[in-house]
Length: 483
Image 1 (cartoon, rainbow, N blue to C red):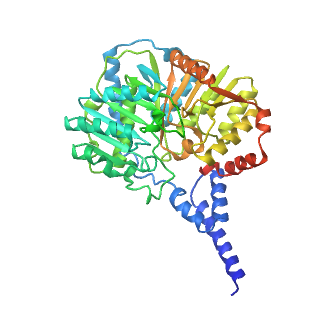
Image 2 (cartoon, rainbow, N blue to C red; image 1 turned 90 degrees about the vertical axis):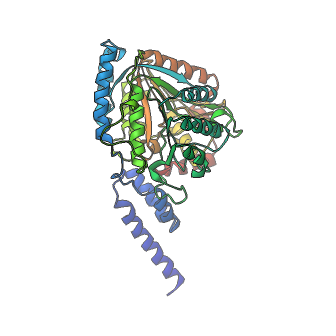
Image 3 (tube, helix red, strand yellow; image 1 turned 90 degrees about the horizontal axis):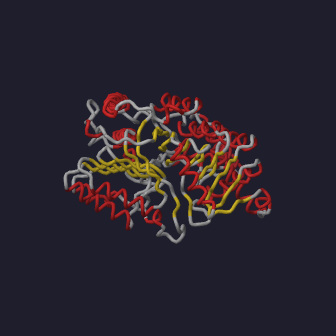
């Protein structure tokens, strides 16, 4: 048998196996053909890549507490409303289209409308960690932390030392981290915390990023709850780069929220569900949730919001649906900040329709890459959207990592989800959708400040890019469904 015949046989067998491998699992057509491209063009190597990042997530182990937590939340929310008394809130006066959005989240994610929250918008890492560590220092009952990245660096060790101190003082400390996002932070890094009585687990019990055959499904959420009374959600992780200490990125521009009020109940519930899906040795009681995790509060803020989570455990893509609803709701302004701009066709068309309808659509992205292929794909879609009338801004003052969307100074979203395939379908994400004109206006003003450090890239400027750069952008775009 000649070498040519052997090669031809391998190619045919590889192609047949590629079809069988990809089409046996339900997935959208873009991801299907992207994987076909990888498997056919990269024999053997493509199958190794698929083994690690291509297979879908088994859903049977996810969220064993969901029904019990939902029942407890209903009970505690009724008690909370009775404690605070009835009050007409801004969410009761918002437009019909936004009421429909509230109902959508209730139907798809059991995301209750949390009223009367106090919300603080934070855009600087130094301010965020000072506030967060002060809150943790004052904890008397529990500290629950879930981050995509928990690095073994200066701020990571500072946080670890504080958590050890609280655990030694008898505070319940639980930490979930993503081993891929925290690459270089081994489980032994947390030994002092576990020795002090704290509990630490990699998400879904994955012990090592090296042997994790579900690499594509990452816990990208950022959640902190302190005594069930103070919560944090947004784009920052725990690492020195988020404090501007990495020369590669320079100043780190991100957006995070500090919450007080019933919105913290939703963050706490999300953490508990993720914990019980991750740690079978020290789970939360699935018969009766301790009420200390959902303490009644006297906080009377002015912000109504919903905490919405999404991930590969559901086909609904709840946060993406929220983004699309916001885009469709816009009448005058739609301002977006995202480090990764790789929308699927439905979101891309929604943005195009909004721009062509005369809505002021602005999207701010970084002017530098942290992931080369992802950044070239981002540039590709930025170029396409600029041609359709979307105003594209490159942020020059360091690296912008914020994931925000603001509509008409009335409605906003802040969270962990980027405007890309990965956040829509592959990552476990969490966002706060905010129904408060004051917070939305504040986020618009922050966008305006960021514009002073940005440059608008016009269609003419995109057209002047080199043919080689455009080729890299187009090539990266072909792999966008699996980046």
